[in-house]
Amino acid sequence: MAIAWQIGATENGLRVVTTPVTTAQSVGVGIFVGVGSRMEDRRTNGLSHYVEHLLFKGSATHPNALAISQAIEGAGGILNAFTNRELTGYWTQVPYERLDLAVDVLANMVTRPLLDPAEIDRERTVILQEIRRAHDQPAHWMGELLSRAVYGDQPLGWPIAGSEESVQGITPRDLLDHVARWHVPENIVVSVAGNTDHNRVVSLVQEKMGSLPRSSFPSFLPFQPGLPEERLQAESRDIDQSNLAIGLPALPRQDPDRYVLAILNAVLGRGMSSRLFKEVRERRGLAYSVGSSVSRHHDSGLLAISAGVSPQNVEETAKVILEEVFRLAAEPVPDDEMTRARDYSVGTFRLGLETPIALALTTGESLLTTAEIESIDEVVAKLQAVTAEEVQILARRLFSRDSVAMAVVGPQASTAVLQEALSR
Image 1 (cartoon, helix red, strand yellow):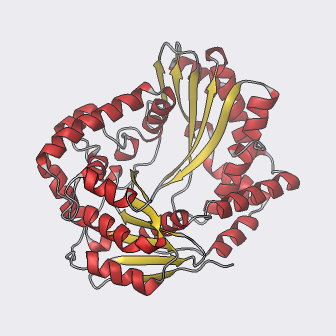
Image 2: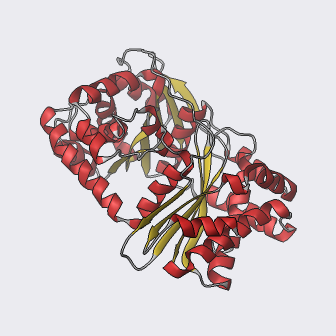
Image 3: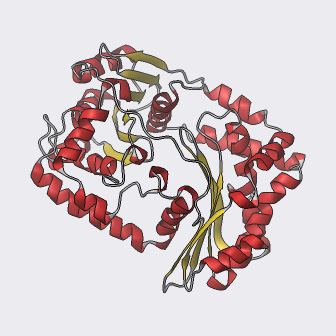
């Protein structure tokens, strides 16, 4: 059965997308705000994430965190949120007959948060603990170091949650100004998927969010291309395993070659049939886990490869990974491998849209970040059309020795080891 969505708007310009799934027993509701960590300056780094936390602490209709959680969980639903580089998302999934409740709770969180001073101080301590916990997790910290190695001292290279110093310095006025600047109708998308219809959804959103006044919102600084001088990052820790990451430039969100990149990534490092898994783990036994992923932003992108290896194998593992990366540029991918990569990419794309909440999150984020939603059939057709020649051309376009950044966290970790792997 084909999945179709409808796009509308409230009277104040807030966009609404609805994806009806009449056989579903639930509805997924997502509210997306076009603000993330790259919209911050150094002093307020972590501000978007801080606001995300505080919106769960009380709104005009649900005065505290317990009232918010009990409203959703009392209906059998789930509630969560996330912050990334360019957007913040709040979402819930509830039985379909509780749609009114879901929209009411999320809408008031986003548009009428209390931002109580006592909660601001209390939550600051919670976020500081979150930052410390992330630092104590070597695999997570490796990712932070890789961002620093790829982007350097610009917002894309800073932690999404901020640093202890920046979070300590964020003031109540910073938080209030953030909501006033960014939580405006033109910068918000509401996405609902499941057992409902478009007219009802638009009517509900109009009722709950239609009074939000129109306002322009700020722009953000463009990405500054080129790797920083310190593109090799290492942190030594007294642990048993080294965590290795390699970063290479990828593509912006709307680049015409984004589907070619998806197939390239599948060939390289997605799943147990990928080249990295077969070569690094199966043939050489260098790592238990190894794989690659792609992140795309408004004006930049990143291909990240990660592996957990024994400390003595860091250099060899990095060398083997880079050999596989540059092999994509040196020779075309065989036909049978291309077929598997295309089918894998199409299959995982389809499976990722099985639930109402997955549909709500996908369509809402797409409409907010690109102002359009590609049909499922269109995406599948573009993935299936990718050729081996296109993959090789893209690899040659993106990958060079000068474009490689690396990070490692582990025993006796040093940039010298990474430099040796790169030079070889």
